Picture 1 (tube, rainbow, N blue to C red):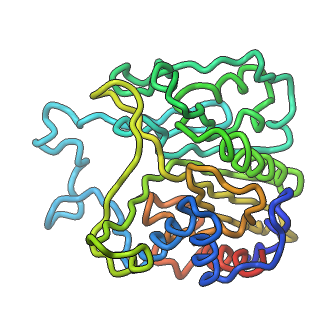
Picture 2 (cartoon, rainbow, N blue to C red):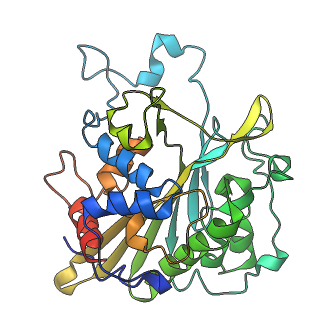
Amino acid sequence: RAGGSRAFRGAGGYGAGRGLSLGSLVLGGALGAGVGAGLAIWYLEQRKSAAPVVDVVARRDGNASAADPLDHPALKHGMPVGSVLRPFTNFVSFFDTRTRNPQWVIERISEETSRGDGDRKFSQFKEDDKIPDKFRNKLDDFRGSGYDRGHLAPASAHKLSQATMDETFTLSNISPQVGDGFNRDYWARFESYVKSLSKDHDEVHVVTGPLFLPQPKLARGLGAGERETASEWEMRYDLLGRAPELTAVPTHFFKIVLTTRAKAGGRKEHSVGSFVMPNAYIPPDSPLTRFIVPLDSLERAVGTIFFPKLVRSGGNEGYDFDRAALKWQKNG
């Protein structure tokens, strides 16, 4: 449906005041959060004017019916190997071996997966031995760093058994997160709210991942209010561990929530919300609407198309996710 405003209204104790329009969302985020939320949304909105996403098609120039590209003579000695797809019982992690963070984690949650015998007091963080040692994030990276080992698929949503709970403590599901005011507070409440959606929907799919968003590189003497005239960007983020095997600390995190309800006649009703939050202290009374962004803008920043079987090429067919997201912004 185009709507979805009911789904995130009054989100589990979040500020439930007036909804924010797109314009006030940018201003409110920049002035109110003071930790990068407004800048993130402003940056994502600029990305909407970027070149359209180009489908990746395996073909050679002038020969659309060419053989498998893996047979290309340039790949005689093998395709370069990097990022790793790691399937677990209830979630899948796509691990980025360059940043040593999951690029994204997608999970299917339900009331069943959230209930069971799993108890986090019996779980321990562990390195993912399915990822080559030189490419994976390490337990030592986090020790004394000041950052939490933050779950992307939360442990509380996978209590079906001790085994499914333990899987969430694998480091291929973990990114460095600020603890006080984020991982242990606002982000944790957000995760709890998302988990609660399974009570009212047949299916809930969630994609969570890190973001590395740039800041405007301002000319000397320019003030922050002149950021929109900046033509250059710069990236700033911490790195953990020992060079060259460094784990990057994300500047932000995103979460995309897709809910599905069965309707009469075999139809299915989908609703989606896309959120970006800074990896920093967030005031506890910040309304959740402050962090909503259109899915298209988020995809451009991440470089990934999410739920491709629901979003058809060209954007004129299939489900209009962004209309739903903007309605959420407007109505809270």
